[in-house]
Image (cartoon, rainbow, N blue to C red; front, side, top):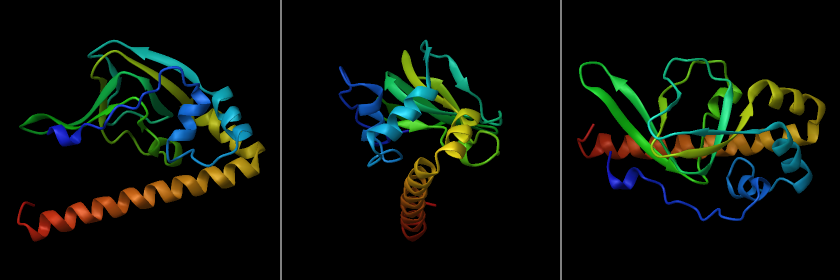
Length: 167
């Protein structure tokens, strides 16, 4: 992992959870009433440095937003050990794929330093989206756009690696 893999830390001091949610792409542009409903179903979790938040292959049932601190996302490569993929800091999020599919976790996430997280359980979000169709529509379109951007970025990286023989 290079220094380029680390995301800049946002200054979130003094910001409410609603303000933090509105700053990330998955929730940007949603009305305050929708953001409040998401905050109301969430909870806070804290982890000490080195603690495992979830392991690759485990069932995915939560979405996490980093409020303070940092996490390290990694995978175990057979014969090589841990391969760190990214370090995410305040304002970043992870685990969102588990809100969409029932697949197991694709990586391990550990507290890179002491971390405070805002957490939404999939079941609670499903219940909320079922009763609030307007929120569901807006949120799902935000997720589609977010995943589309990520797929394009991955395609660009793969093309670069293939054309520069670094693949």
